[in-house]
Image 1 (cartoon, rainbow, N blue to C red):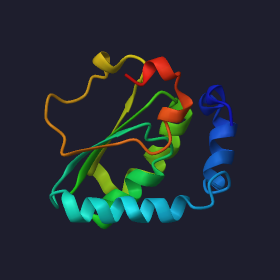
Image 2 (cartoon, rainbow, N blue to C red; image 1 turned 30 degrees about the horizontal axis):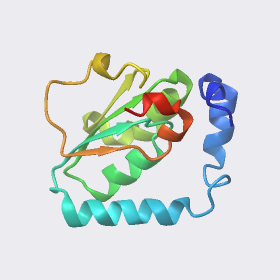
Image 3 (cartoon, rainbow, N blue to C red; image 1 turned 135 degrees about the horizontal axis):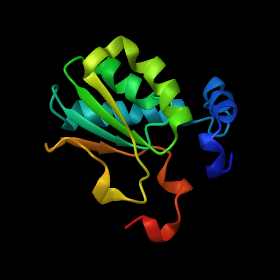
Image 4 (cartoon, one colour; image 1 turned 60 degrees about the horizontal axis):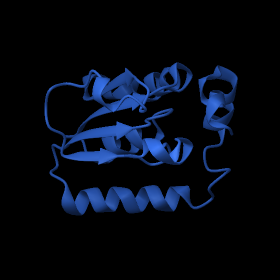
Length: 132
């Protein structure tokens, strides 16, 4: 999927219906990420997920770590709508922000430190000059 398609609700729903199609080892990678968090992050961790998308990773984090809270940032309202649905069971442990990662200084994030920052599948969709 081209990066411009993420804002299209139909494209977002299609990707969410089969998120492992383009990366068959994604489930294994997510399990490894969760194991790393279990080994190195505090149980009541504050997590920032850049490029939260449909909330697939966020839900796995919140499910495995009942003391965790998460703020997810994404530039696609279509993906955030799916994330809101997926993360609704976690109540106020999950907060979502619509923001373009090309503007990192204007995210409107809470003025607090995060224990963990995650980015699983968003950076590769950005221009290389924006990675700084």
